[in-house]
Length: 435
Image (cartoon, rainbow, N blue to C red; front, side):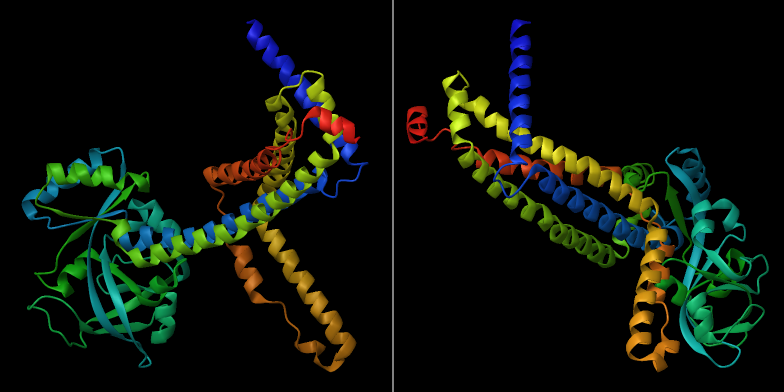
């Protein structure tokens, strides 16, 4: 108990002296003050949080569209008529599995009503897929018509695919060439479908290549040898390995593939891009830490007489060093709190931020064009990319924010520790004699 009380009093006098040094330092000779050091950390943390959250927003737009529309969380193949019923029943009884849906798919060379041609991936789904799969319905945004595949001759096209074919809602498209079994004609003009809707997703490749028909139509056109697969959606995407282990144990004859194996190279590029961006922005903290180190070294030199007096009055070497370490800690904490609050505020209002930036850039460009070349002022337009950025919400990951704030606190702490290592290198008598 007595030891705890002594530790409390020791910390109090260390914090008091550290705060006193900081206040006097603002009126003294030190070039780098606590305020500007905290300000640098604040802007560094704010910048990193905003950049990472905006990057997360763009990446998750792609990732969500791929997993909800294209790859699912888990794909299961090799299901026979004997195992289908038991497998579906088991999936519905599992709490981690949100939905399980059968599908067929085949490659097609598609021809539009005006002769437009494009390669497409035709996926056959249950006609009530929008009701059965909330994630699918959320990511498939209809820009024309409706997602209706109840009839055998109905098809829903991606927006870019529809543009390539020259098709609109109500148009007729032909699956001229279609991959399938031996009982299906490779080339046929009889596979005609009416476009019931056109959708748009967050991933351009899906918009440019995907088309949906109902399950019965797929079974009819793809042939008897077409493989029926099942797509599973999980409550948590990170639990895919656990669910795959269960499936392999209960149904060892099935082929199971995780979402991590689909578009592996694309997801890898996104991860590398994010990591490199984080490393570049983290250099802000390196620069701030170097400045804090230089300022602390200068402060130690300027305060050598006060440090010697503290040592003469009974202050231990570790306690005197702690004065500067505590100051670095408080500097980091002040900057981290401000940076986190500002970063989160900007992320929540990122749409307004980009809209303001777009307007500010437009009016600045318009003003200078009007000033130096008034005849061209009519052609000045706002940058449409800002509107695209504003439409993508920032995704805030609490763990990332915590790690950024922790690094913002650790960098001045490490700089202060390094600067205070030789704080009592000279003896007390030598310093006081020089003074």
